[in-house]
Amino acid sequence: DSGVTQTPKHLITATGQRVTLRCSPRSGDLSVYWYQQSLDQGLQFLIQYYNGEERAKGNILERFSAQQFPDLHSELNLSSLELGDSALYFCASSTRGTGAEQFFGPGTRLTVL
Amino acid sequence: AQKVTQAQTEISVVEKEDVTLDCVYETRDTTYYLFWYKQPPSGELVFLIRRNSFDEQNEISGRYSWNFQKSTSSFNFTITASQVVDSAVYFCALIPFDSWGKLQFGAGTQVVVTP
Image 1: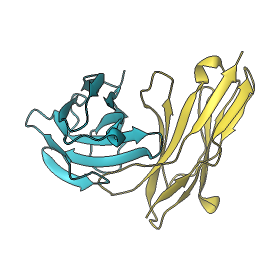
Image 2: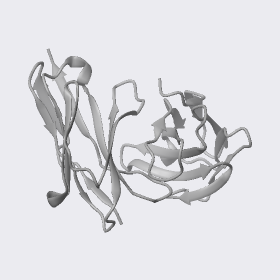
Image 3: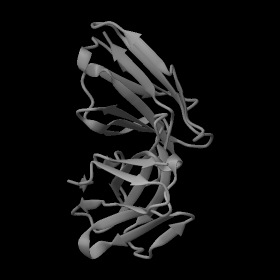
Image 4: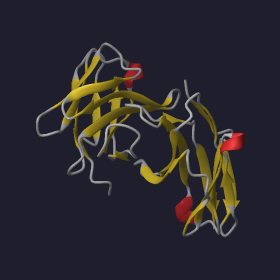
C-alpha cells in the first residue's frame, strides 16, 4: 500500500459525459501527478501540482483539467468523453516537486461506452 | 528530450531461473534519476528503486539487483531465482535531476514466471 488513495476504483460512463477522479496523496507529500495508461499510448504524464500550484503539463487534452486543493487532495476532471479516453488513470505523489520518487495510487479504471 | 527503451516486450521463465530486464535511455541532461517500477496483475504501480546519475554503484536488494552503466546509457534489472509472484510488467523510467513533472517511462517488459 503506497499510501496514495484514489476514488473511484472503476467508472463506467457514456460518450459525451463528464467525470471527476479524486486523489489523496500520502501524508506529508506536497506534489501530485496524474498519468494515463492505455494499451496504445503506454504510461503518459498528464499534469503535476505542487502545493496547490500547477508545475508541469504533459499530454493533457483541453477537455481535461485538474486542480489541487488546500488540503492537498487533487481532482482530475474529464469532459466530453470519447471512447478513446478509456484508460487507467493513476495519481502519484512525492515529497519534493523535482526528481523525487513518485508513489502511485491504485488507479481509476475508466470505461467510456 | 528523454527517451527510455525497453526492447524486451515479454520474457517467460520457469521458477528459480534468473531474468534480466534491459533498459536503455537517452537524455541530454548530465544529471538525472533512473527508476524501476513493478506493475503486478492487480494493476498498481510499485516503486522499486531510484538511482541518481552520479552513482554508478550496482545495488542489490534481496533477489533484485540493478546494473547502472552510464557509458552505455543502460540501467538493467535482474531478478535472481524468480518466483511466480514476480510475474508482472516492469517499467524503467527517467527524470532529469532538477526537473518538474513527468517520469519518462519505457514501454514496459512483461515477465511471466511459471511454476
